[in-house]
Image (cartoon, rainbow, N blue to C red; front, side, top):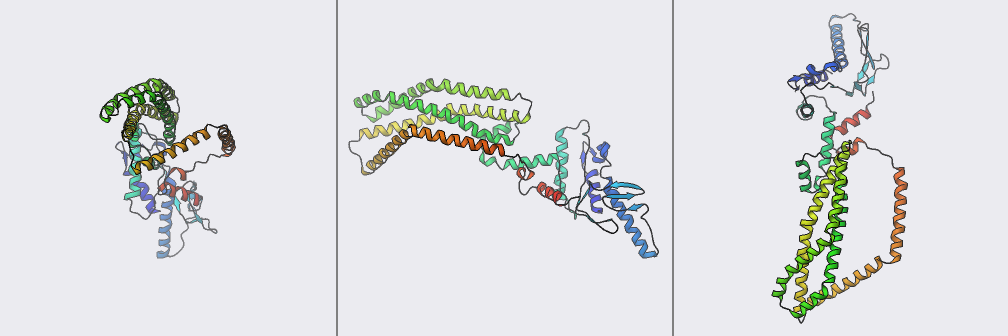
Length: 401
């Protein structure tokens, strides 16, 4: 108990906020931990009385003005409630006094001083946390619980998700000062769904344009089988097809991306902070996705198209095919047959009925179990396994007062 009071004095006097220790800005909360100090003083008085009893003999009665019982201690006729501070206490059944104590709670509360911002308060809290976890050398096992420390532990938990996110996306977010929230974990899946739709539209338009131009290309190939001359025309042909593709689906991709972007931008002005964060993150992600669609996916499409067209031109110039080429040709033919059969199966009425039935069953089961779901967010799900907050929570639950 003496070390507990020493730790209390250290935290109240040695850590300053705005040039003042806790005892100078605690205002109405300065006496909050006074019951612990008075209990320690009572133990010291009791110890001195016992020593005097052993040395001088006789009997010293202090029960009239000092009774170290639990949960109410009597001090000079005043009752002091110890239950908010002591947990896991063992009481002598005969005398009702406290015999053993497992957990003592020290509380530091104060009104924020003037000219002190929230960052200064967080810095003060972190200094105390760092001292208790790293520098304290006493026999006690100090555990800390504060809003700033909880926020730091939640952020530390979220940091473990960073390997699963794009490095550029993370740097961009924190560069603009956007804080991280667990709700942003939904954003990658939402943006992927939008990006897949745009990519499908671009690929479908590209295939349709290539199919329409196939007859004209065959006539050109019969007129000129020179690979060098044909390769010179490939770039012009690809540029022309890319222009036709962007002319075909560019407005659709732009309108859908702009609509989603503006919708989330409107959500930024909602009063709820988490909704603001969610909308801001999704709006930024959709904008980046649109840029990637135009300036990353389209060049890759052109490069792959050029490679495919060159391979087809080389095959036409060969009169005989090696054995390996024949083998790969058979494989490609089998694969083409499989894809045609798969497409026929996908477009059949049986498949549509099967998918619709499966979807209805899935929706029904989802609605059934979603209605039975009970929200249960516990601290164990918010903090890492090695977080000191888990130990503090367990001790608080194990040791009742």
